[in-house]
Length: 171
Image 1: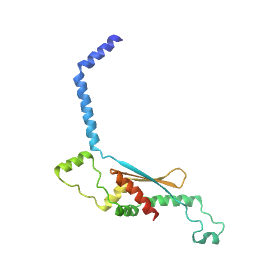
Image 2: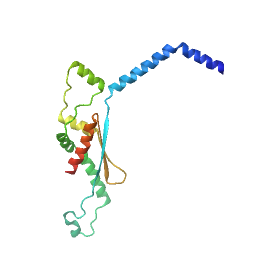
Image 3: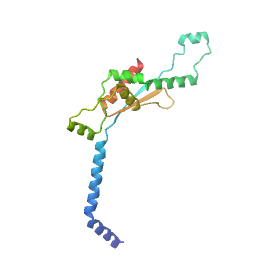
Image 4: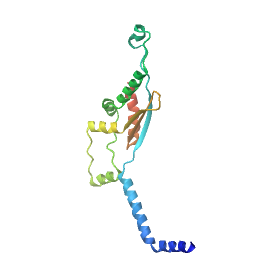
């Protein structure tokens, strides 16, 4: 076995330039792939969705046995989640905060900087659609707590979006 180990070591030392070239190519590819990806930041917030007022429009006085059913509270929570993901609410958030601009990989930013060209600003509708795609809203377990997550290439924009979304939803 020692003889075969010595043979492997000789083989590797004889091909050291080939091995080093393979490592260098792999390292270069990793750097290029990393530069082609835009960094993404995720902001997270939680909102408690309270159930409706049980005595809404004096329902209890009209029918003392009237109680909200579990299905109604589940549908109410689902409705509130859909409202959090609506284009109208995202548009109100867009009106309140200034987006940082389109997300672009570092390599493309350098290329446009060297060319001296400014990227074309997206339309309001496409920006809203992009924001909704990057938005994730879901409940945590069997609670009334809703978790809101938003991903963006700018950390400040991600945090501002989640905070403003919560404020606008409550208003």
